[in-house]
Image (cartoon, rainbow, N blue to C red; front, side):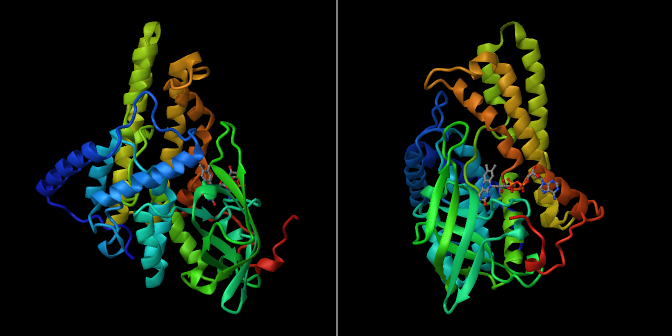
Length: 417
Ligand SMILES: Cc1cc2nc3c(=O)[nH]c(=O)nc-3n(C[C@H](O)[C@H](O)[C@H](O)COP(=O)(O)OP(=O)(O)OC[C@H]3O[C@@H](n4cnc5c(N)ncnc54)[C@H](O)[C@@H]3O)c2cc1C
């Protein structure tokens, strides 16, 4: 599969499409409540069922995952069409839970490496809102070194038997399937003995333990696999070639997290690239004597916002046009992580005490919660440190970081525990 195809589209056709989307959204999608926007702290069951229902509405209207091929339930449209949907949908509740990782990370991986049976079985189910996916990649021994996976999958006839543990899987307890990287050969260097699998999450032998976070939500889970039998037909790509699949998964993850994927649908208003409207609203409420300082902060954030948007655009076009290598997605990922963290810090500074204590239903509470979660933008989708490594080694051509385990058979790599 080519990296994303950004076909040229007739501007008049796009204007017409925008009008259609606006009309349809107004008639069919619930408007976002600006005072109490849909927020992750709301009940997890409700969040899952609500997202499934909204995804189904989009599908019924013909506006779900429009860049996917028609034969799998999409509309075979361009990234420009999806961008129109994203712009128009800013004021509406959208099924963003389906965006990352289901449609924008797992989806393109299955499109690229899946068998025809896998594509027909799974892709339409996401687009209709029937099935949510998650990634089982990170392990308790560390998520940055993906190729160091210790979870094992041993062949037994037509099945693989899985043992081990994955962690930090977003919303696994409410999801249906996972893409999982496991070790199938211990006698070759680490990158050469991995295989990617499709794993049904609620399956005999899989224990799911939700992890409570600082804001009391249970976004993450840890899973334990005890002799879990998975049919060999669930292998994605080739056995022992999971690193090829995982590398593409990382490419799509960087694009999704950096707002450069045509497969995400709907956007959160708190993305830096979406401007400073909500920060301006804080200034209007809490401005007072501090208004001059707030103006400076807004100007600073507006600058970051413009730069992020232009950077994202340039990187997408650069990869597409061949003047930037695929790892350039890490530039957007790094900038997004840092600017998002900065944005939440600025929101907190502007709001002062009222970001710390609020009444149920007041919008100010969202900023306090986002502040304590702000580092996630520098960790999820690969950390900003790893993004810096990729930029230095694979874009700037600096020497590779030394790795004692790169060429050793994996079963000879010294490790603790
Ligand atoms: C919001 C969010 C959602 C997530 N969703 C999922 C999910 O659905 N599925 C999933 O599998 N995982 C998920 N993760 C986990 C995420 O992928 C990992 O947290 C991340 O890859 C880092 O792994 P780690 O936490 O184990 O840190 P480690 O890999 O242990 O790293 C610890 C620290 O060391 C630094 N470090 C490590 N190696 C190097 C190096 N070579 N050079 C420089 N610095 C280095 C890291 O940057 C980090 O600061 C999610 C995380 C977040 C925050």
